[in-house]
Image (tube, rainbow, N blue to C red; front, side, top):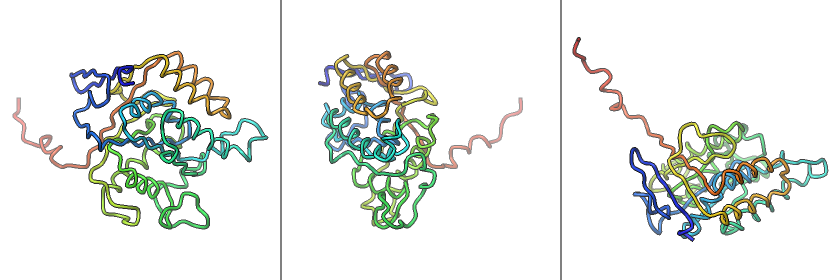
Length: 278
């Protein structure tokens, strides 16, 4: 399958082109490569990265997908109001398995749809919290646990530019959780990862906040496979508009590298050096 792809990566003024992801990456870790996609809602990742997932599978990179919310606010008829969560859960497995992701790598976290603001951070779990891990709940608790479990080399999350609050919250909570996962905090959540993974943004509904760095081109057949996977979400009638955007754009996706750096005073020292008066 790799010959069906053309991958273009921009690094400064350099333009790298290859039929594979590892062909344009100088930090590729071979058999250690593992991708983690964090999807605020069940359909977000296939919208923004359905081709990338197929490319990763073709290169034998393990793909893990976290579905954060339970889809309970996504009903399009009164009859589905009490059953939409289970409907969307099954649609999720149908979608991503059709792209080659094993069922055991698709994790349904079950946080309440449109209420993620209540689950920022970490706190002791109460009652039968479906997202509880080691007697704690909260997005940072959950993300830290799954990052340590999957041990990804690269993570993908919808851009912070998306309008939906769930997308913004997941984006923020994932970044701080990557920092937690690499530290010694909360040992009951697993062994800390050796290094923070490379992080990338995918676009679902809004443009990137800055230009992307990676372009994936492929065949119409693999675009059709992505669209068929997206059509697994039959309950989401409003998704037709997004399908039309993807179909009209053709077999292409864009990914943006997300660089974040810890504070370093040395970065600012030169600003305060004596200057020669002109």
